[in-house]
Length: 144
Length: 144
Length: 144
Image (tube, rainbow over all chains, first blue to last red; front, top):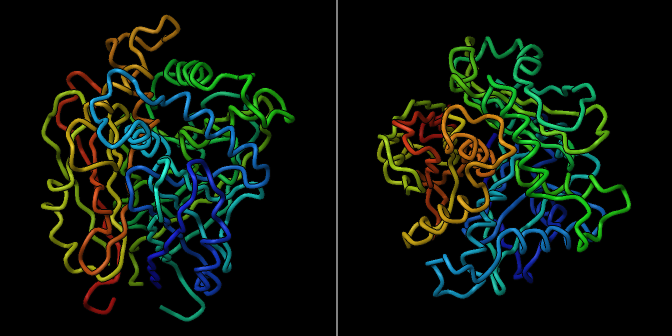
């Protein structure tokens, strides 16, 4: 059983955003999977996907603070600068965090831990809408 | 062919721990896979899984030293602080390193390089037992 | 449908290298996949795979500059030092960036964004040839 869908995320401000519910709502096919994997992939090099704490919004604020300090803007050694001071740091953050998450599916549900959610890392000041590809593979209720 | 299992890791002290053998020992089904992939997923947001050097324990010690320096405790800008000074750094380390590893399987064996092993990154002072989900998918000896 | 191949990358100098075309050229089987996933896995603990900007070579230069500053050589606290000053930083960079990428496949093509490409992170001064394992799984033109 394979399901693959293009998902569109509305433009969000720079920072980290919890998007689990938005993704799951667009994947009703999950309910039919007995055992499988969900891959969510972001088709950009200046935004990222990662899994982290899903309850306290200050975790996401601290993520933004930490990554802004660890990957500063306007480093004198940056050579890729013509798209703005947020551009090269956005590329670096994207690779530090990653472009995809892969989550097990069991009995129609994502096997996320109690405190886990999917974060969008929006690393540009004006990143605009973002495109994801969700791929479900697994064994469903009907025989394959 | 799909196999999915909940694995339980006993509580370990903060730091990086080589867990390849413990995982493989719980997955005798690997032997029946001709070609496939193993996904190992950690259901927590303050611990991580990564692949790295499997031989010299000082690599794991240097990992702990490096990540403690790169993601310090008690940063004045942290807002998520009420679970202790190790908590917010643990969340950040978890996303820098990742919540899952995906490893090819061939002829019943993981296709790890000679020097590769699976690390658990335990980023809390007292993280307790940790839950993993292992998912094997592949083509086995018998026709699917 | 499963395809798994060992790919060999020629020795490259330390730094980040765009290898999308080299990988795709060795996987003509992609053309027969209607919907699926490609996993590319590197069998080493001192080199990495990541996705990032595929057009401007200065992005890759800035990656090398950033990671050399963020993961310095010759830190006095490193204990794993006998293979040279580039060795321990290479292990750390490998885990910060990751050992594999997973990319959706649709209608015979990788679903990469317009600006996304596959980077090899060669973190050793003399890393030599590198081994990858490419695994394609999916639903092909013929019924499975």
